[in-house]
Length: 242
Image (cartoon, rainbow, N blue to C red; front, side):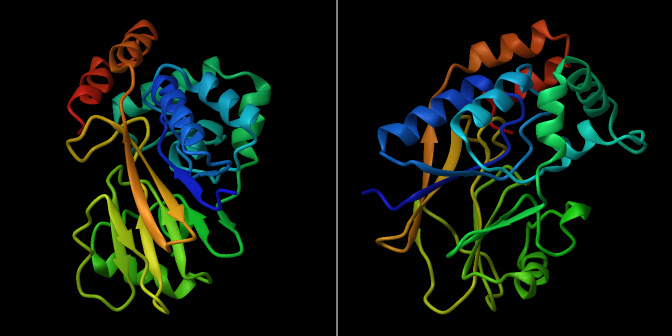
């Protein structure tokens, strides 16, 4: 029995990437899956992404784009292109899909890991963990030895007490008796100059993290964005990985 868990994040309405990633997980025999939020935003297929997660029964925490779509207040301070995406998404989701997004929790705890979209330090403030000092704010709130995050769209690995993040390869071992904070990368809009969809596998047997890069139909995802009338920039950046 495969004891690994697959963690995905930042789908951003990219159903083409999500389907490819889910198939890759199935190919690896992984049945335990967790999503770290930002299911919607930027991409042209937000409803399809929600439906896929619901159909597969994949638990999910709330991301900042999910929160903006379901918030009753306005979008003051949000960039024009992002506001356009949020408003369009609000208009195309069904009531059931919106209710699913609204009900998403901010954090999630399993027996041997926990999950949050951005940081355990004030999760609803959506801070970016880009440096060790930001990771250090999250560690005191971490109750498991490993916590998974997304939000920055770039894989990363932080160890409590270290001055710098780990210069990661495709596989990194967890540190015994030391808390680790792991960014799993982005499925639907990578920003580390690699255009492939990215997710992570927590391999319990070997106590390590494996990042997977998955090819998908980028042109199809771009076409969905253009057909939705969303900013062309959202489509262009998919092929650039930034």
